[in-house]
Picture 1: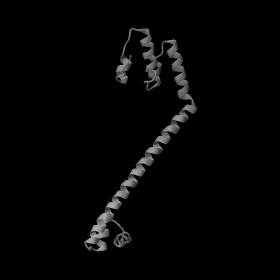
Picture 2: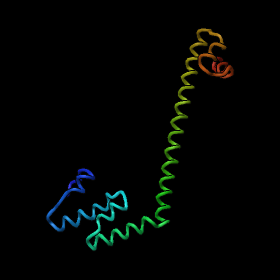
Picture 3: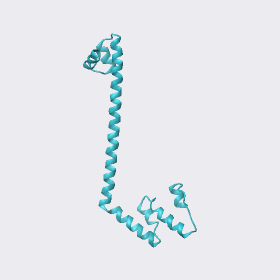
Length: 131
């Protein structure tokens, strides 16, 4: 059984058993980060065929388009999450300012001072005074 330790230590493992060597060579295909690394794995017929297929897939516009679409969808989702978090934070801050304004109104503070301190509009403060 091969225990995955890290990309680099895995790639540097040596086994005398041909079955293990073949398995390790195949698994190395999943760790390459460049065409140069891929080409360095050439040698055995089974590897040469796999390398050619990987290179073909890397140039297939449909495959590339799927990857690009996934990347765009991921970026859009991250943007939506960031926007939602910002909206929630802004709403929380505004709610906090409303609580502060209500407390200031209870102390009979001037509305002009309350708007200056909280950043709420005069109308917003007056509506709090009614509630």
